[in-house]
Length: 324
Image (cartoon, rainbow, N blue to C red):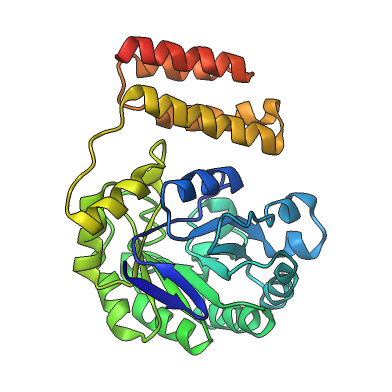
C-alpha cells in the first residue's frame, strides 16, 4: 500500500472521508473508518464559538482514538479567532487542523467564512498563517476553484496557502456558485497539483472505485477525498481499497447486510448522544441507506416518524422483506 505524508502524519493512499456538516459526525466517521477510510475530517467547528465557550462547538471536537489519523476542521473569517481556536484545539489532540475555505452554504458565506474567503485571498492567507502559528499539529486548507466562473483563482490561492504554511490543500473542483451542480473540474485540480509542492487532495464527484481511480489518474493528486458519494454507502471505502489493490470490483452488498450496517450506525449514534436525538439525526441517513430500493418512497415517508431504535429495526425488517 502506498502512503502520503502531511507534515508528520502518514496516510494510506486510498480514500478519505470529507468534512460534511450534519453528516461527518463522530459516529459516521467511525463507521467509515471501520470500512477502511484512510483519513477523516470533522464537521465544521466555529472558531468564534470555540473561543466563546460554546458547548456545541466543544462537543464537536471530541475524538476517538480508533479514528486516526483525523482532522478537526475550523471555519471563521477573523485571523485572530482562528489562531486562538487552533491553539485551543491542541487540547483535543487532532492529527491535523483543517481550515474550511470552501463551504458554499449561504449562512457561512454571508459571515465571510467558507468559500467567501476565495474572494479575499489576502485575508485567507492571514487566517492560514495564524492557524499555523498557533497549532500544535499540521494545518491544511480545504478550498474550491474560485467564487464563480469569472473569478477562478485556485492556482494563485493554493500558492498563497502554501506560502502561509499549509501542509496540504484539498481542492473541491467546483466554484462556490456551482454549489454541487455540474461536474467537478479535475483539470483545475491537476493545475493546482502542478503549481505547489505540498500534497493536494482531490475532491468532487467520486461515487465509486472507478471514479476514485480516475481522480488519481486525471489530476495526479496525492489523495482522494469522498463526500456525498458515501451517503448511505460507508462501505464505499472498502470497495475503493479493494479495487485499488486488486483491480477487481466487489459485488454489491445484499440488502440484509446494508440494513445491518444502518442499524449499527443508529445504535452507535444512540449510545453517543441518546436514543431520541439519535433517531432524529438518523432520518436523513435512513433515506440514503434505502435509496434505489423497491418501495424507497414509502420508506422515506415512514422514516420521518421513526422515534425509537425498535421502530427503526421494524422498518429495516420491512425493507429486507420487500427487497429479498
